[in-house]
Length: 272
Ligand code: NDP
Picture 1: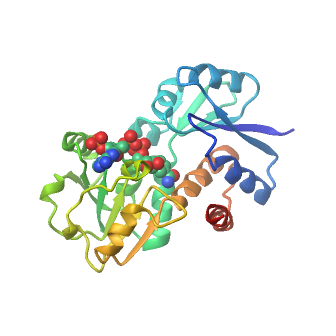
Picture 2: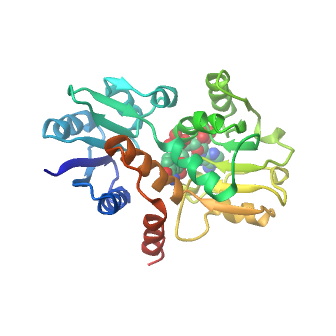
């Protein structure tokens, strides 16, 4: 029997998740289907209930429903609790829905694959929205020393306070940033709107690696800027996308897919 999975979002037509999970399933010989479901902005709980009522085994959730998914779960992983957001849902044997958040594992896996281990590395995390919050615990668990900055400074302060017990994290006003970091991660949505965040050039030197959670066929605006400041290397968020999907797949199926082949196919598709 074919197990049913789906991703919910609005918009959703652009989602690469159906391709990624179908590829993972073929690779690992798992009998499953995976579709993209467009939920009306006020219809997400009903759409989700219908999906699980009709036998759905698990789901991914993307913008703008991750916080709502968090509210709807019967049970949450520790990461989901700390993130305040859920991107992975699984129907348990007793019918209850458990929520997890795999974005941070996806980020750390990809950042370390590109730039090496994060232990003791000074990391600047730019942005204090849902993506930043979901990634903080995995970054701190990896041993990174995290500085948070954000256009709205109070949000960075609030996040730093939530995670202060877990690891080495502090908040800093953008205008006060004056030292280079080992790794700079852009978690803002500025690039999606074609905007470039304003940051001091002092945060980057010839040893700094830069990562943009946004991804595109061309070098992202943030990575163009980082390259122009002399960053050692840059990477975009396509690997994070595939990494979070791989972790969701593992949560559902107990099998770890190989990400590199799927990544290569996605890069080819994006270049066309
Ligand atoms: P949110 O809307 O929750 O947060 C947006 C953040 O961006 C806030 O910190 C906001 O600052 C900041 N921001 C927006 N515009 C600007 C600007 N012009 N200048 C400076 N800061 C700005 O979004 P998410 O956290 O959910 O997502 C952030 C990004 O991460 C998106 O681009 C998303 O696509 C990407 N992402 C990628 C994933 C992947 O797998 N590659 C997974 C998840 C997210 P303020 O608080 O001041 O408004």
